[in-house]
Image (cartoon, rainbow, N blue to C red; front, side, top):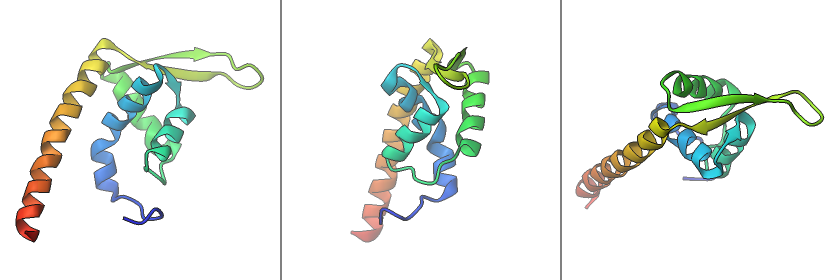
Length: 114
């Protein structure tokens, strides 16, 4: 895949919650812009707040992340997200499941191309 090609949106939608959980876990806590930047650095170009923030809200509603508003030093406040124990378990489970699923797809495609 070329660096400027975007992943199909249905693929991104499928993995976005797990990727957000990993981005938050990687830093211990993060605010939305940091999460977007971490995902972009990992190769998810084209993500916007309009995609990430609703997913963060669903993760919070489902109890996988918690949030806390903090006053900014020189600007507006920021909402920091951190994983809950349920979010840590969800990330672990999703990582295991996703790796197994990816192996199934790789094997299937290898059979087709092999």
